[in-house]
Length: 81
Image (cartoon, rainbow, N blue to C red; front, side, top):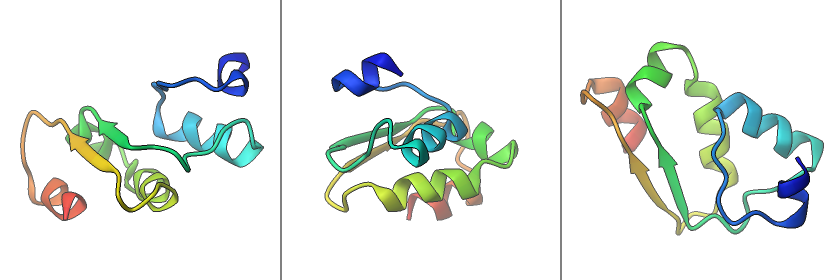
């Protein structure tokens, strides 16, 4: 939390924890230029799609999004689109 308040350049977080920080005003995602989703297939399997979509909608539209996934199921393809 302290580092986010100071203006961290890189943030690694689970979707739920990042949303907690966003909703509390600890940080925002207005300046995100790269959004990396590691294990995207696993996050979807675990039911994180609503949180992922919420974060994506809060970021600027001209960001680059990188999605890492061991597989490429239809759910991941839909989310990528």
